[in-house]
Amino acid sequence: MPETPAGPATSTEARLGAIEDALVHGDGRMKALEEAVAHNTELTAEIRELIAAAKLGFRVLGWIGVGAKWTAGLAAAISGVWGVIKLLKGGH
Image (cartoon, rainbow, N blue to C red; front, side, top):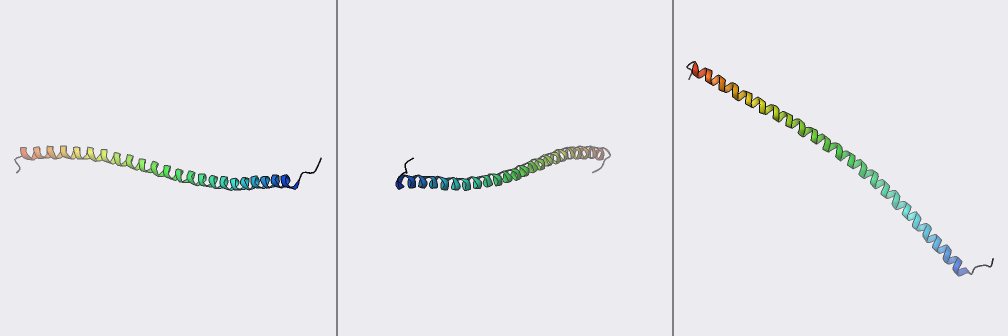
């Protein structure tokens, strides 16, 4: 095989060097993206846990509200019956 002139060989080596540099740079970017995605996944999991806790909290508050509603109704009924009894006994 005949020897290639210095120009094309140098050009090919320069191109290969540029490609290797781009691959190294791309590898660094890929690692940074993987780390960012992992961090984002952790934050998303924490946010989902907070939302689940808030949903449970609102559910418990709803149950407390139902209990308070029933207690208020029962108290009103008892007060009404007590008032009628007091009135029938001749109380003031």
